[in-house]
Image 1 (cartoon, rainbow, N blue to C red):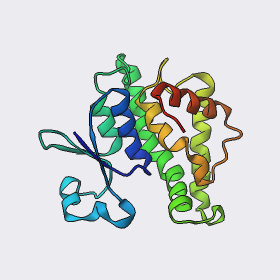
Image 2 (image 1 turned 90 degrees about the vertical axis):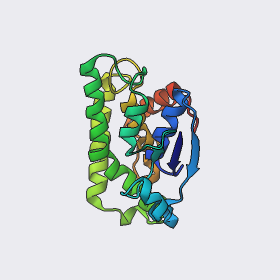
Image 3 (image 1 turned 135 degrees about the horizontal axis):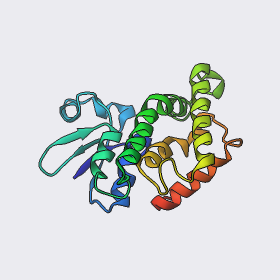
Length: 194
């Protein structure tokens, strides 16, 4: 299996982390998105949306969108709750992550880290939405060690990717003690280092 990705992308790291947690062998193919490598005809043949990550399986089939990929790779593992309702709650977090968390936190990080913008140049609405996303996570994680059930699931993997580096996008996690604790617990459960 080949993973086409950029190690600077939290969405790509999700796939890498799931493969490593589940001991799924893969070949990493670096794609420099900032230099346009995801817009070449060869890459667009794999994913017409021109986004990373993309996984190409041994039979030649390709799958894009980070949460679809991790959902497929982990479908029979402990990263997906056996209880159907809890699995659906996990999916609820996966959809929310792409709609309400990533568009604010990841975009602010991209602006600051990769485009060199100062925090003062960030879209105030994105900052507000990012803090609203962190507040929702804080409320949930004040009640529970992980987002769904008693152990780490794909919900934690998906939300960890950009939450652990939210400070790089100008987000101060000082007042988010449950989120900070969860970051440490999730990193430990996945065997990640800083």
